[in-house]
Amino acid sequence: MTALSRLLDSATRRDFLRLAAFGATGASVSGWLDIVAQRAYAQEVATRARAKACIVLFMSGGPAHTFTFDLKGGDRGCPYEPINTTAPGIQISEHLPKVAEQMHHLALVRGMSTEIADHEPAHYLMRTGFRQEAGLTHPHFGATALSQLIREDNGLPNFVLLKPGSGDASRGCTAGFLPPNCRPMILQDIARGIANLQPPGGTQAVRNRFGLLENADETFLNEYQDEAIRAHLAGYRSALQLMDLRAAQEAFRIDKEPLHVRAAYGDTPFGRQCLGARRLIEHGVRFVEVMHPQYWDTHGGAVNGQRNLSQTLDRPMGALIEDLHQRGLLDETLVVWMGEFGRTYDGNDHYARAWTTAFAGAGVRGGRAIGRTDNRGMTVTDRPVRVPDFVATILKTLGVNHTRRTNVRGRPVGFVDGDARPLDELFA
Image 1 (cartoon, helix red, strand yellow):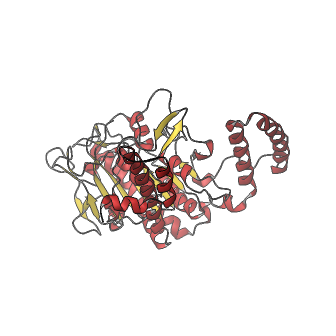
Image 2 (spheres, helix red, strand yellow):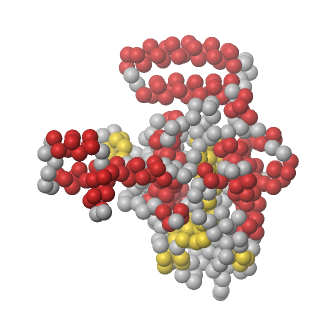
């Protein structure tokens, strides 16, 4: 069967008759085939969707790939010993032994090659898939995914950002031009749950005040049909639902976990956040980003700095993957480990032309590395992966057609910038 035949087979009879009625012949057929191809691809994405949820582990500051997952020793390179993993042929840092035990679940993407090695614009680029531009704020790829997915009305937010500490490393963590219900709820400490969830005067007093506000807003809405008012009302209703639903509040109670589970993750800020991420996913939250509480920006001190940071990463990340697997959640949860860029051969300076990310779960075939760098980790020599490829992979795994465009103030804006090539080989 030819490619054209496959496209024609994928078109519906209604599409064909509609185009035929308008005389879609000659040059216009190419436009019709573009439409057919888009529909066929959207159907393929929906059919192949593997993930019901996603957990992103974000290492803000730029983890050194040559000191973690793509070791490069030698003169002034990484002095760490490489260790074997549960994936034959793959070695990683000696300071990541728990992660090494889970390597059969993980696929390393060693060919990341991006464009920006400055923290704030790189945060934005990696979280949205776009460079910053004046007059337009793009959504986090988690918000983009949620805008296209059916969201369960379980009283919980669908996107939670666990951001310990007070540093501003959340550039790109907004809904951008998407509706406010796609934006993340930001929590600094999962163990404390949602601050001020129970008002001093009780929920009934708040409900009475909301009733008055709702009447006023709905009167205004009936006359002006303003989307901002709809979002305002939806936000209040969600807050009231959180106050009322004990099940929703329970999702944040990591103290309810057995002692041996909490011990496996470790009693550290990152350990608690990773445990909280698993608990949130288990209760129906669709997207969680966990930010490492420490900054991976090891200028002039990579040998000690990357060692210490790796040790704080190792136990929680290993426990998270193992816990998801044991509970049967890994098959339907995509786990992504990332930073905003990598570092130079000696681990001391920012570097974006070659670095590493990692994927697990949701059908990812673990135990291998995709892409390769040279002997100093400074050039990608096989399968370079750009930001659009990276973001498109996540969206496609969640069942979102990354080739779609949306209208933003009369301007078509894509879900992913440029011609993306999702890493289908992750699942092959």
